[in-house]
Length: 176
Length: 232
Image (cartoon, rainbow over all chains, first blue to last red; front, side):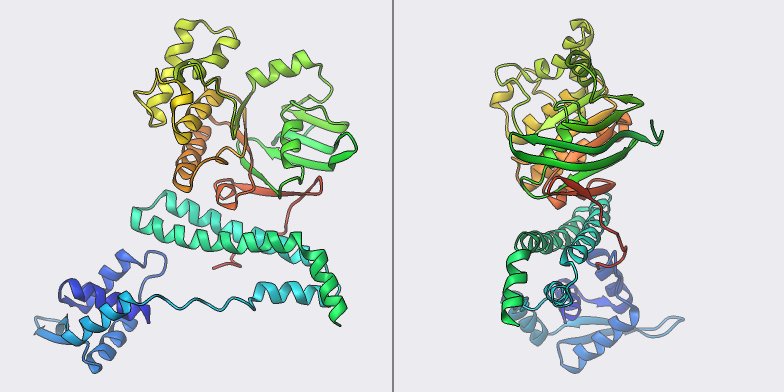
């Protein structure tokens, strides 16, 4: 979903060939995970079908035909509406992390063993992202920051859960 | 003793304050040249552990070895000398003298080590450009921003080229951006000097600058089994 808006956004600035669009997308967003050509062209044909982009020109020299894509009025209106709409928040009440903690308690295992391993894996990922950020340009480093702050939120949840484990064990055992 | 790969080793450290136990059998090894983060919740004993391995506190029992020497049994005079010559310290607050200028503060450890002023001040001044605070040599540290003052504290800790830099919540009073800048400088300066770093923090974003982390819980050190690639 957001890849199609990201492509529309690039076309919102100026018309582009599919090949250039892919490279522009990768340089803006995809250094760790680039957008495959297949996905670029399938997204473009969906946008064409929905009349959000049009083909402004075609060009053929030696290889296959090259199409110059441009955003339509409908596409721009859709893009602007998307841009102005806040994202829905994820319903995080039943995260897999929480289910693992509760399952550990149900099976009389020590939840801290799981939480410590999860914490180490989170910090390892943070370390990779911190290293990436130190070597990157600003756009890439801001994306790494976004991921780092989300990992931090998980880690803070793990800390508070560790501090409340005895209470949680009691509650679960009383309910059964 | 001991393993040559380790610059610091602590075994079975116990330390209480009155009836309150802070360390209850803590073990720790610090590899030469690494940046190690010691993490843990408030009151877990992580700062007490740092103070014991840095020769500031004497543990009630257990051993602390630094570079082939047992330091927990040294008398106060020898430990003080060791702290001045082989160790550098950065804390959250309080190690700078606010009435002195930034360059006075940085030169101070050298003067304590009896380096002549004519040698100490040029050495101190090198740090201003390196830490992005050129032009602030004559500013009193009490008049600097938190981030600038922490850079001065970092220079003060590293100016005597310590083998180990101990940092206890070095960015604890700074906002996210200033913390990041101080950590960048801390890591690159420590690497340039070949110093080992022991970093106490409760903040995982700060710990992520380290090569490795350990957790302190209830006065003991735990290291989790790591499965790489689990978080994407």
